[in-house]
Amino acid sequence: MSSLLGNNPSLAVELGAAYVLLAALVSRMLLNRAGVPSIVTLLAFGLAAGPSGLGFVHVDIAANPGTRALLQLAVVIVLFEATLRLDLRGLPKTSMAVLAVLGPALTLLFVPYVARAYHFSHLVASMIAAVCIVTGPTVVGPLMARIRPRTAVSHLLESEGLALDALGVIIAAVAFATYTSRPGTPLVDAWEVSRRIGAGVVLGIVWGLLGRQLFIRTARWPSDVSKIGVLLLGVTAYATSELVSHESGLVAVVLCGFMLDFRVFPHEQLVRSFKADLSMLALSIVFVLLASRIRVESLGPLVAPAAAIVAVLVGVRIVSVAAATFRSSFSLAERLLMATVFPRGIVAVSLATYYAEQIPAWGLHGANRFAGILFLVVAFTIAVSTPLAVAVALRWKLQLPTVVLAGITPTTLERARDYKSSGHIPILVDLDERAVAFACSQDFEALVIPEPAQVVRVVRERGAKIVVIDDASHWDAARAAVHATES
Image (cartoon, rainbow, N blue to C red; front, top):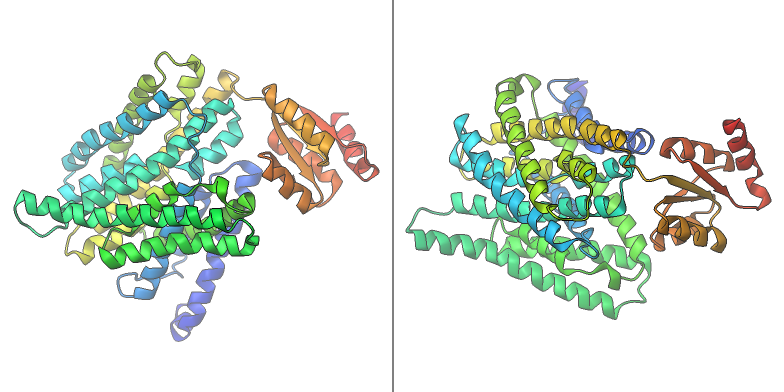
């Protein structure tokens, strides 16, 4: 196989692309059916393809500018899409502010100290701390869907993850710019860092504001044009910022996403769906390529420092949640649940990949240890956080009851609103993709099923206690299947 691929480099690229798509497909299926976080499946695929597995994926990013550019573009898309999903409306402002300030501050204070104790350089220790600020929306989202807590809890946790992702990107960029500035007086170094990061801030805000005005004035654009327009905006913000000041592009992407407002976009739900699918493909590329470069045997010496860092993150999480929810309306059980939700994921791995390639380019050392320890931190936090959160939710019965409504009509939509207002989670299903798209545009979770009897699968997967089926005759098979299951 190796000799065949060596004689056919284009075939190696095509097989690699097919492998990444297979990983993305399997990860999405396991996420939908069993609630397995996508990052777990993707990292497993990457390890299986790399030197510690079958060894048929050989990625030399340093020697291949094209691969490096593709990887950077994937990271840009992932970060841009994550920032666009942030919605601060309806959040408890005090709790959100404390989580967004206290958690990062404690992380930046204690994590570098632990990393330095294990002989990491000042640069790598600071970068580890900056990356550890981010959480894992791609892990938190499926976890919340599985636990089904009160909307206020899930909204706060998912919004916190998105906000900290953006903050972590900016802090990591500042830390890297600080350590890679040319030696000079403190004033000169401060100016250099401000210039490099400031370019990203200014250009990100400018492109974000231009995008807002553009989409307000082009409300009648067809959906395919809107999709490409949003993607063009994010990539342009990154490229122009990098052109002005190297290493400022990620900051520009994040701020551009912050400045945009999806409520003024034409075809909002279709654009969101397109961005989510594109981001899924991009993060599949990032995760598989990163994991394929890791040798399992090289991770042994990093287990102890990674475990120590995760222990610090657990302590930081408990303190920050206790402070953020003090005298709030959240119950003690909900606070305990929040304290167990601290997984790192998509952005942590993306930043690890991005900066692991930048560190050697500046003549600095520690890139391999940097990527390896963050790989372990991500794996450990997911392994610890997920079962703890599920156990807490089950022990204190924090799950909201789920209702499956088959057949999307004005009547079922009205019933779904009633169930939602009474504390249930409505899930609508239909055979018609257009009906599902309409339900999604009304802020409902809706799924396409291939045949009526598949309602039973949705009920089983979501643990629904109530099933509402439309009176139309073509749902007779669904009614019969549900009745047979209940019997």
